[in-house]
Amino acid sequence: MSRLAILGVTGSIAAYRAADVARELMRAGLEVRACLSHAALQFVTPALFEGLTGHPCLTHAFDEPERGRMAHIDWAREANVLIVCPATANAIAHLAEGKGLDMFTTIALATDAPLVVCPAMNPHMYAHPATQASLETLRERGASIIEPQEGDVACGEHGEGKLAATERIVSETLLAATKSELYRGLTVVVTAGPTYEPIDPVRFLANRSSGKMGYSIAEAARRMGAEVRLITGPTHLRAHPRVSVERVATTEQMLAATLEATAGADLLVGAAAVADFRAATPSKEKIRREGNMTLSLVPNPDILATVASQRPELTVIGFAAEAGYDEAAARRKMDAKGLAAIFLNDVSRPDIGFDSEENEGVLLLRGGESVRFDKAPKARIAWTLLEEVRRLL
Image (cartoon, rainbow, N blue to C red; front, side):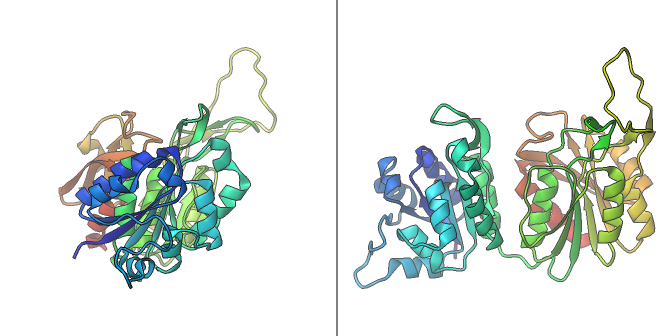
C-alpha cells in the first residue's frame, strides 16, 4: 500500500510549483491528494491537480467527494504526511493558531501525521516577528520547516523568501513520510558548522561552512529515533526542538563540548568544518591598518582524534572536505584519527560545496569497503549515511 501525502496549496504566486512537487512525489512512489485554499484558486485550478493526481481536489471545508462521507476525517486518518507548499504567512499563522478555516487546515487538526511547511513570500513578510513566531510554534510541535531560498521574488525584491528547490522539498517530504526505529535507544552526537578563531575583537579566521550537512544528519538521527546532541559552530540554522543544541564559537570550545556530549553516547558524526589553525596571540584591541602585518598561527587540537582516543568505546565518523576525491589521503586521515569511517566530499564544486543544498561523495570504511553517494539533497544524503553507519554500531 502506497504512502499518502496530503498537499495543501495556498495563495502564493509560487502555487504553480506545487504541481511539480505533486508530480515528483508521485514519481517517488507516494499517493498525492491536493487541497487548494480559496486564495490558491486565484493562481491554479482544481482541474490541474485532479489531472495530475487522479483524485478529487478539495477546496472548501464542506467539500465531500462522496455523499455522506467526511473527507477531512477520512483523509486525516489515511495521511502519512501533510505538506503545505507553498505556505503563505497567512496559512502559517492559521496552522500555528490551530484554526480550521479551509479543508487543509481542518485536516491538519484531525491528524497526527507529520507536517512539512514550505514558506514562500516577500522577504519582509518572512522575516516579520509574527511569521517567525508562528514557524517556531510549528517547529515546537514537530513540523519540518523547509526554509526558503535567498533570491529574487515575484514582487521584484531580493531576499529570503523564494520557495525552496523542488528536489529538496520532495526529499524532505519523503523522509517525513518514512517511519524508522533504526536508532531507537541510541545516543548520537553531531558536530556541525564552522568554527571562528579570533584575530582581534572584530576579525576572525573561519571558512564558508553553512552547517547544513551536520544539521541534516542531526535531524535524520532524530527521525530515526535517536537521542540527538548537536554541537554547532556559528550558523543561522535552527534545529528541531527535540534536538539538544550547544552553540560554540572556537575549535577548543567545540572540543570541550564534544567530549562532554559524548559521555555515554553511541555514535559521533563529526560534520563540522573546524579551523585547523588559530592566532597564536589574538589581539585584545582592534588591529589598525598600518603597513604590513604578520599573523602567527598555531595548530588547533584535532577534535575527532582526541575524542576517539579518549572514548575508545565510541564509534566515530568523520568528514573529509577536499578539493577532489583523493581516497588514499582520506583513508590515511581515517586511520590516523582512529575513525570507523570517513565521508569524502569535494567542496571545490559550487553545486555540492559549502552552503549548497546538495552533496555527493564516498563513504570509506575500515577494511577497504566504500559506498558511493550520488548527488542528492543533503537531507537524503544524511538519511542514507546513517543507514550505512548503523551496521558499524
